[in-house]
Length: 306
Image (cartoon, rainbow, N blue to C red; front, side):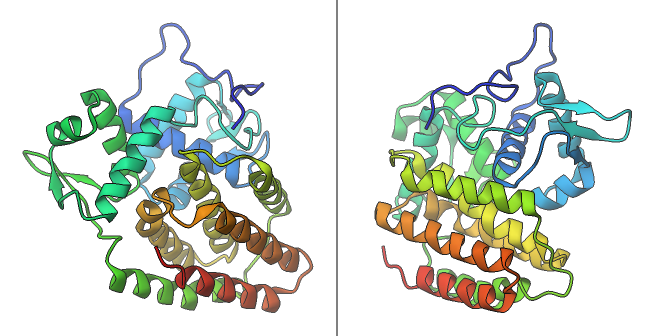
């Protein structure tokens, strides 16, 4: 990924005297930046708490705090009391404000790997994670905060943390894919479906860049963000809020298994090309063919074995 980007997003650093946000607000702000980067958002686009809350599957209150944080960073600006607008379209990859540090990414991937391999129990303490991975408490808390916002870890009352889902369960995995086969192809055929040309253009550029950039030890997190942005974006385009909510929930279930990517770079390329084929058909107005391609895409992913 590029080490340096220009523009407001690359220079988004707290200004002197700025109020320090909570860790959860910063994590949600990071998720917003990923959404802006992968979701086809344009400079000057209006941002509302309600729309962002629906897209990120959270309540409006934390969205309000995260937007205030991004406003202090200069990423968004107030729209005369009517919400916010995006100052500048973010770079497709690696903004300093939106991307976790490489060490944080590596820790999240290690937790995902050990969780999927059955090494980590359903409940674990911060001290356990510090000892296991030889990292600071701050690093552990950052990783757990990210997993909390992703909906796959929760702080237990009084002591420790627990994982809400068991993504390594093969029965649950198969049920998830079968559910997606019912929902996602149908989303493209909804009467209210509308493909946003700006979103489609940014998705295309993101995928084409992913096809040529080298794969690194932490690339799986950026790849998952792109993949999730594609599927959630099409669900949102369906115009059906229940379909969108269902796809967002499925994204949360898949996060750990995609962080611990074991299918090789060839599968990354196949995934990108299949997404681009679906976009081609949607942009041509061939929604029925796009729906069939989506079904084939999900079915192929379902058949992958670790």
